[in-house]
Amino acid sequence: MPLETTKFDIQDYLKTFEQQAAYIEAALEENDPAFLAKALGDVARARGMTQVARDAGVTREALYRALSETGDPRLSTFLGVLNSLGFKLRIAA
Image (cartoon, rainbow, N blue to C red):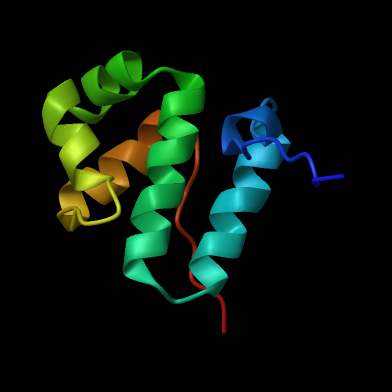
């Protein structure tokens, strides 16, 4: 009997602000810019990409490109997205 699987969709696990924050924190800890951009994109899609783009001051299409696995968002875009999602970047020693 073959093993039945279902497709994993991160959106199923990004329903609350706390889940979204934990995901972005975990992405930051990986020290992988591509993964961090993808995680921000996942959270932005969970919230609604159009509104996040508007709040961040970029077009929806530009935000999709910047936050894709191959994207490389500018610092201003990165900070704009964090701000629009209600997150703050903090540095700790």
